[in-house]
Image 1 (cartoon, rainbow, N blue to C red):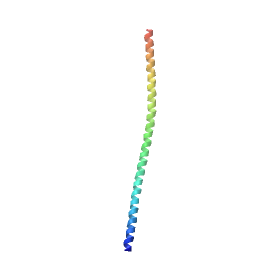
Image 2 (image 1 turned 120 degrees about the vertical axis):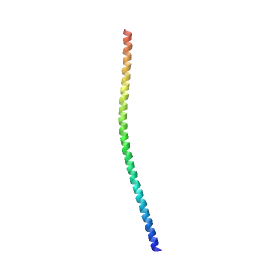
Image 3 (image 1 turned 120 degrees about the horizontal axis):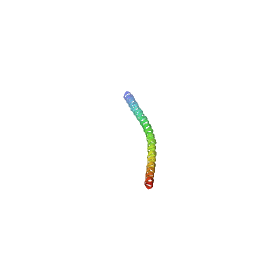
Length: 83
């Protein structure tokens, strides 16, 4: 009976240790996935910053184009009145 009890205790300890080992492996995999996601987010933030800068340049170019078009219209009207 004593040997059976010792074997049972040993089996329980081995089972618990193995479950803990599996959980540690899962935790390691999860940490790697989190690191990969953080790297991807960092790349996306860089892309976002580039797009924001490009968008600002395009917005400014559109505003400049609008001002140029307005000036051309004013000059055309002025030429028509002079002719």
